[in-house]
Each structure stands twice: as C-alpha cells, then as structure tokens.
Length: 330
Image (cartoon, rainbow, N blue to C red; front, side, top):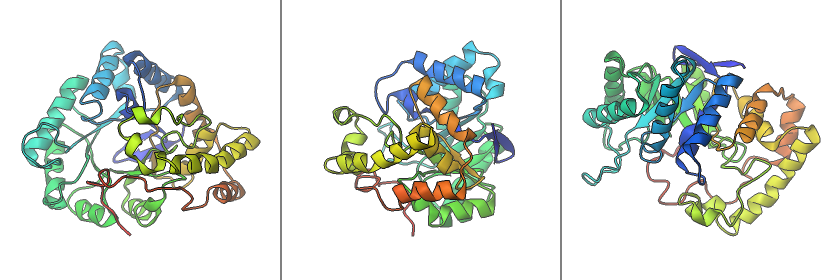
C-alpha cells in the first residue's frame, strides 16, 4: 500500500477512524473492533485514529486490549488520539486546552491503551479564548516529555494552522473531506500541502452515504449525532439518497464498490491527504482498502464530479449545536 508522510513517520495512505469502535454509527462489539484491527494488520493499514471521548474511553480501551493480546501490533500501528474536549462536568467550558488538562487527558489515554507514547496527539477542539500559539507550545512540551511523537489539530482554519506551525511543526490537521463535503478545498488542502502537514480526512464516505449500503432511514433516529444532523434529517436525507444513487450506479458501471470509489477520489485530491473511514464490518473495511488500489484518470475524476458536482448535498454538514467548536473559514 502507498505510504503517506505524517510528521517524521510514514503511514499507510488509508487509516482507521476508530469512532466506530464506540457505537457512534450503531451497535458493535469489541470483537468486531478486534476483527477490523486484525484485517488492518493483514492488509497493511497502519494508522489508527481515535479520541479519548469516543465512547468515553471505549475506543481506546478496545485498542489497548487488542495491543495487549497481540504483542507485535504496537510496532505495526501508528496510533493517534485526541484531547481537549471537557466532559468531566467540572466548570462550564466544554473545551479545555490548558496544559494540565491536555496532559492529564493524554496520560489517561496512554493508560487505557497500555502504551507509554502515542505517535500523534491532536487537540480535538480549540478553546477559543486560548491563543493557538500557547496550545502549540503545550503540545511541544508533551513531545519533549516523550508522551507523543508529533502534534496535530482537528477542525481548524488555515490561518490557525499557520500560527501553530510558526511555534512547532504540525504533523496533521483533521478535517471532514469527501465528495459531499469540500469546504477544505477553500484553503486547507492547499495550506497543508504548502506546510508539509498531512490532511487527515474523516468521514470520507460521508457517514455511509457514499457506499452501496447507506444507513437505513429508520436507523437514524437511534443515533444521537445523526438524528439532529441536517443531511440525515427529512427531507434532506431522501434527497441525498436519491442523488447518491447516481454515484452508486457509476461505481457499478466501473466495476467497483461505491465505498472504494469514494476513497479513491479522496486519495486523488493530494498525496498528503489521508482518509480515515470508520466501519464495524470487515467486508466493508476490505471495500475501503480496495479504494487505495484504484487509479483514476482525469476522465474518471470528471465523470465522478459530473454525478456529484461540488455543492450537491442537501443540508449543512453540522447542526447549529454541532457547529460549536469547529473553525469556519472562507
């Protein structure tokens, strides 16, 4: 599998988004998560991307249990986690980027996974009142202490990336990026390329929408995040399902699963782009990995974007409440 530079490391060009290990998109078991990690080792996928708040530690606990049961797995995997969201109930600030909070969160993550260092530590959400330069210094101190090897940020603007980069190299910025969510092309894709920062693309198959088996409409009310997400609410969801039928038809015509084609499209947006889809199913995981094997011609890219032109999706990517934290830019 092709490699992508991430800080000073080289990782597989596809990673695992481990939010799915914590039932974000529906029920799962730790055994399902272990099966995904087994398949990743067999298929050459090396990057795992998790967070301390995914299932309030459940995702990290599953990863830790797998590492303990498979002694060679730690050397295989490049592990990233995140901190900075405050769900302790202490105070009124939902985001805490203070040195004490970020280090304590990282220490707890390390304990859950049974490791002494993560390869990449992101700030999950910026605390607006705290200058990002100060936060970059905090993360740099954690690198010096040997608790993480590289630093990153999630959902920040290109201007914020430049400010942080001036203090310490930023290995990765995580952002939603797919055929249905293309705002990152308004400066973030370009700035990451210029600065040598990896753009870690989450939800690259648009939360199942760009697969052959989108989530059934009657499942969505049972998923706390999606039931209030504009793209998955009526009437937008039906409209989006109808529009993506054309994408599924195109994938079938090309002889590949829709998820594979969606991943291939993201990978073709830049050599520094690293998609991290999540899944609870090994067969689906194999479809995602197959996307790394596809070579798309300029004509193929044109056909894909004729079916799903920029701006096609109905509804915003976040609700009003969900927009609290991510940085908007234009």
